[in-house]
Amino acid sequence: MILDSIPAGERNSNLNSKILVGTGSRSMKIIKIKSLKLYAFGFYIHPYSVCKKLGTKYSSMPISEVNKCQTFYEDLLREDINMTVRLVVNCNGMKFNTVRDAFEKSIRARLLKTNPNTDYHCLSKFGSIFTRDVPLPMGTTIDFHRTADGNLITEIGGNKIGSVQSRDLCRAFFDMYIGDLPVSELAKDEIGKNVADIIMRC
Image 1 (cartoon, rainbow, N blue to C red):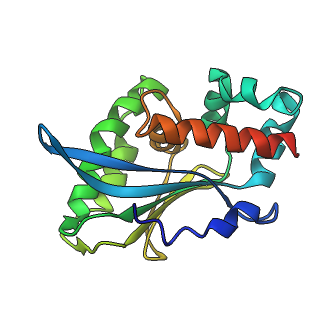
Image 2: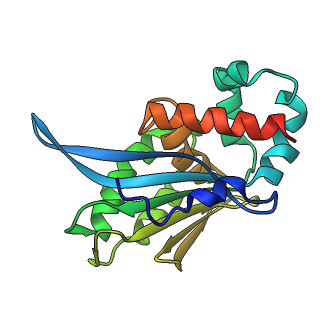
């Protein structure tokens, strides 16, 4: 798994910095017995933001209980908490439209769950960011940031390529990692334990 661009030392960053709380990967089956790893990912969160929003509610609960509490993950998604998913491309030949296709179907279903009355305009705007037929070499980093005011910002190699103002889109995107049927159950569990540990220290 390629995660060289995610420094382990960020786990010990101060409260004004993002902290790495979980890692995983996403694969795609190419034949029945073989799968291809599309990307590795790291999930980051801003401790001050999560403490401010959820500290009072969960700080008195044991970590083991918080991590298994479904409302905990729902609160992480519902509250305007600063968080980031960093993808690291794990194969050659990936292009912008591959990234778009990898997300679009899942986000559409999760948008409907988040808001049955959604008009999908935010998804169309998000997809338009990836319309260029540009190759993404192995090791390329793609960052998705959720801001406190409901913006989903996309960066490639540290350069901002687009932003969509939509709380529904933010929730649907991060639901892929900490919601129902996540990209990786192991990663979701790791994220839950580490965020709960942060809250215990608020």
